Image (tube, rainbow, N blue to C red; front, side, top):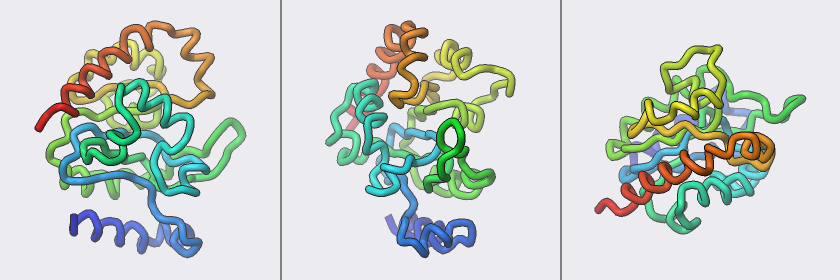
Length: 195
């Protein structure tokens, strides 16, 4: 774990993050050497930033439901990790949170991923993560990407953000919870059961 601690100290000392560090705000992510399932989303929200616990909100409750795991498995098994594109809450915009800062994931994700050799599934939550990690056209909608999610499996599973803001999207796209969620749950359970 010393490599992860060194990286955390480097993140907090980085000039790009000094304003957060000065206010006593640490980076929000969850990593470890035994992580098999890695969740990559946009950035922590305001509530998550306050607690410092990834997906500690209604979105997290729904995400765990979709994954078919308990909060204890999510936080304490060591098999589930969370590595957003930005480890800090970027602030509010006109229609939601501001996008993650450019270049942030470029700087820190390779270092973190190098120390997580057991990762077998990366759940890409939302369009920002999907555009960053998948070979897709800029013009392709998130809905279209998720509809062809089997093309990216077993390594990647693109999903919609579990935020209550997406309830309308979920009602319009019932195939997601009927088809994608069961596949996600089966893959998650398979990896959670690995020794």
